[in-house]
Structures are given as structure tokens and as C-alpha cells.
Length: 214
Image (cartoon, rainbow, N blue to C red; front, side, top):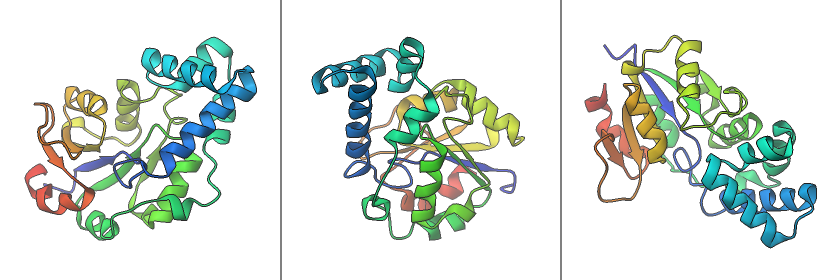
């Protein structure tokens, strides 16, 4: 029965290509934020960002732990886009492909909610999603922490074994698989690890593989 299936989608580099424009913009904004609020030069700010990313999996977690940074303030100021429509790179058939997938759809992103909703609006797919689970929703405990996955399932009465996680991050897919979800990796790689059920090069490929995932 496909009616009980839930599709859980990541946002950046899954539903759209964030690499050309959005990620460089965020990286510059985060470095500038550290420069301004921690009084560092550009090189020091970049090094600190990398250190916190390697240790905690997110710059934000290091800032909260070591500098008492207000996460909402940080996320708001590092995710401002004066021309988001121009920066979002999408697949032309995105909406059509998502509409044809049977089952409920959820967005689960480590991004802040104002940014996630803005990108969905630009993509023209906001109405296709039951809910947006952002970094705020999971108490600033980002993927691959299992906490957010479990909170999403509890909040929307989802059974992990009836969920399909679509992601570009292998670490996040590893967590999803451990919880019993089926996994779809969005990647150009030729090979996929054993915890990936399907590898696709873009969302439009879901129209080919969906039937085998239900």
C-alpha cells in the first residue's frame, strides 16, 4: 500500500543545486559573521569555521558551545539572499516529478526555516509538502543526529520503515538506514555504499525508481 509511504527530502543539493551560487554566498556570510562578532580576521574566521565543522558537524554548534552565540541571530544573518530567484538552480521537471510520487512529502533540512520556505517558494513546490522540519524544529541538533529523524516521525506519526529518505549526504542517509528507512542518494558518484537503496543523479530520476521503493 503506497498511501502510507512518506517521502522525506533534504533541500540543498537535493531539491535544487546549491553549489554554484547559494553555498558560496552562505560561506562568505558565515565567515563575515565570525569576523564581526568574534573580532577575527578573514583567515582566522575561516580556520575556526573549519575546526568547528570538523569537530561538531556544523559551525553553529561550535559557536553555541564556545561563544554563547544566539542561533536564531546567526542563522538569520547568514541566510539572507538579495536575489534568491536568480541563485536557485532547479531541474525543469521538479514539480511534475514530485506530484507523481504517491505518499506524503516532508522537507527535512539543516537550514533555517525562513530560508527553506523561501527556496520552496522559488521552486514552486511549497504546497506539495506536509511540513518543513528545519534546524529550529529539531532544537539545533542537525542531521546526522538521529534526534531530528525521530522527532519528525513522532510529530507526524510516521513509521520509519514506511519512510523514504532522499538526500545528497551519505552521513544523513546512514542514520536514516539505521532507523529502518529506505534511502535514495542524490549523487554523480558511480558507486554507492550498502546502506543506499538507490542512487540517482537528480530528482527527475525518481520517476524511474519510485515504484521499486514503495
